[in-house]
Image (cartoon, rainbow, N blue to C red; front, side):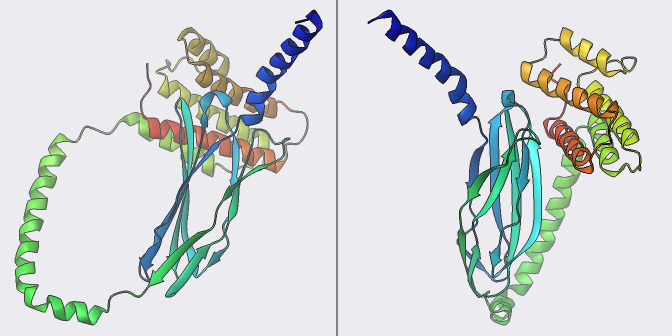
Length: 290
């Protein structure tokens, strides 16, 4: 093999090692489809989960409301779990309008790394549900009539047993972790704090973030500045993914706080959403690993 051929193959191998991971770095889509057959008085849930390695950093995710036939969207919730793998879960609860075929038409969940990048779509395929009639209430009541007395006795006994078990369980319930109250309070404060001054909002959010991080990593209350928190975490051998996530949050807040230009409302909303997702992750995980 000539030297020229060897150099060419080496260049191709280097380019592939750099660019292939970048091309394929994307959240992995998991879908838990709704039940295929339900009665008219039942609700149905569609669960969608996006997962990616924490080392890839945070993604901005946008979920569109699906177009529906013979269904109405009752609830839409989302939650995030953070660890070696980050998991963003969307839960849609639907209720049928009438007996017949119901359809959740295909829709997209989009993601991107930064506000300057285009949105990349992930397609959620069409879901069909057969809605059948509920059993007639009158027929059920007639059929249960002979058993009414026996049911009452069993129910009363069950209630007494349940009360006894609840009292026993209450004795064994560990006290609520006070840290969870701190996380929840910070989450509420960031979500509800109102001010016409964008810099005042950012200063308030930054303070709440410091409280959460100091609580989660058992940092002394005397260490209150962002720089001191980062310096402390540096000495504790924090995993690279966690360190990058925290330092990036502080860096973004600092850049926005000291920017000489007006901050667009969209950037403020995106920063608020990122902070809330981070704190929700701490609520789900619980206590510090230290």
